[in-house]
Image 1 (cartoon, one colour):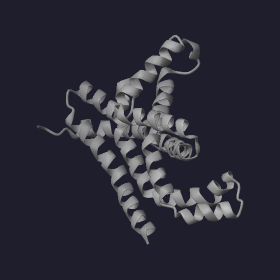
Image 2: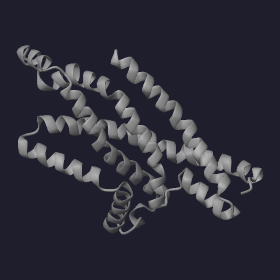
Image 3: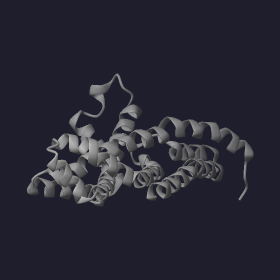
Image 4: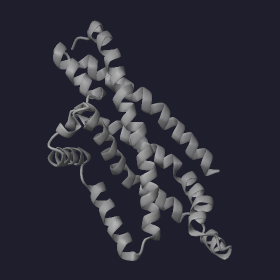
Length: 227
């Protein structure tokens, strides 16, 4: 196996651009969407009437237990069927549409996992605080905003960070819907140069350089919040 520095030198800026424009974008926006939706799902499972809460839990379970690439392909196929391909959006290029779909699917998929983290955080709050809020006649919305959500988020923040890292590592699944993220670019460059070693090695190093410091930060944050 030979290493070609010229191929590596040409590949790095292209892949770094793909990382910043697509991989990082999908991870950041998708994680924020997942964090918000996950909290909504967790609150819904607690506050909705029994049948509605069970139905919500069932839907979240279905999303969790089906593969992410399959969900991406299903949504893209459904979108193409409903809107006659991309003809109704001729002012927007197909890559942008597919990237938006990827963000939405990633966000919804990972929101189901974050919902479980939130649920555990909410259940860890002493019952006395719920009783105190009721005794003070606090409205339900204010109880959540002022008392429960801050504590639940604080308790689950490290877990949410870990899910964000997992999402980051799953972004190569965007290959399934032809989104030009970093690994897709590595594959394209490798095919054009008839040498995949350099491109895939650079992709791995970029993933490692981005995820390892974040994982260390989450570990330190978890230890800090434990005290």
